[in-house]
Length: 389
Ligand SMILES: Cc1cc2nc3c(=O)[nH]c(=O)nc-3n(C[C@H](O)[C@H](O)[C@H](O)COP(=O)(O)OP(=O)(O)OC[C@H]3O[C@@H](n4cnc5c(N)ncnc54)[C@H](O)[C@@H]3O)c2cc1C
Figure 1 (cartoon, rainbow, N blue to C red):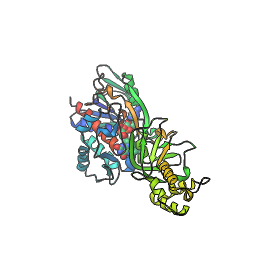
Figure 2: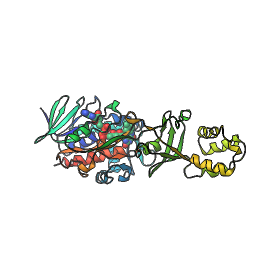
Figure 3: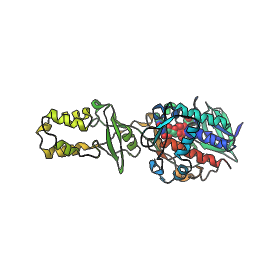
Figure 4: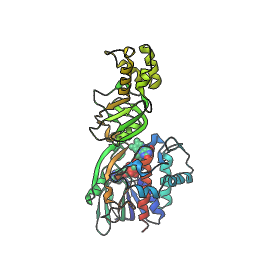
């Protein structure tokens, strides 16, 4: 029988980070992962450059049934702490925008850093080992495809459901349920919207513009991208995390300005109005808006009050997403292990001493922009601290 003090299930961002932190506290730590390689999401993150943290990370940047749950862990392991680690390894990085920190070279730098820290801390790693279930008597037994493991403490870091093609499974939720721990329904988040036939605009696919996107009471100002099947871009991905089926999404494609006034001020022929409109909006979108008037009165024949109303209508573009692109493309999972069942200090299940849940498997979901990795590091650090018993 294989035996260890601390068994970490899942060798992604949270699992690897927690493993070496616990190893540094002198614990015997083993990481199990079913993949042939570890940290596959790290490698594809941030377009291959890993947006590894965000300087502004605070509980306000996370969704959870308990918005206060992330506070303690985020305060104890900060973006600056992770940046110090990155600097210690001499990894070049830069700030892209809005506090987002990216590797200059490649996300591989972050994965190699975590693996080196694990090696230095004496962590044992077993790839190609599928976790099947966990039981507890005096100690824990983790049943795997490579036989059982026993351990004093089990850290579940098996992530969420997005991108099943690179190893995502629902095993973390199954383990929680088997111990009577509730799950907040997992939903695909940070994901493009699909639109129905009446709203889809494939002829505009590839057009991007700055916009305010509003869903319910939440609004984001970033880029929107029209796709062949619907909408994407950072502002849409952010909004998707707050969206529930049936809800409208409002897009202000002239944020901070008044498109109605701008249109009313544009005189002349249709071509002149189009030229003017193209200074305010991407040209293809402007053209589509002008051409969209075919069959009705040409723009240049409209009176200023009508142009004003039209501009306001365009500015408040309301869409009814048919759905999202789902787990195939979602960057994260909203929902997960119910935080009401966990200690916010140690990520330990209140009713199952020694069983911890960290990273994306927990019902804490970050915005786009490095917040999800910061949660992986912070929740991993919190659980590791508890391993110093
Ligand atoms: C395309 C993409 C880009 C992203 N870019 C960013 C970014 O730039 N910045 C950011 O902050 N976040 C980003 N994210 C989100 C971020 O990658 C995740 O939030 C983060 O990886 C979660 O870490 P985790 O360790 O909890 O889970 P994961 O990294 O998903 O790790 C879970 C591990 O568990 C293993 N596992 C699953 N089931 C089993 C099983 N049954 N047995 C054994 N092992 C199992 C998996 O193989 C995996 O290695 C991105 C996500 C995607 C999909």
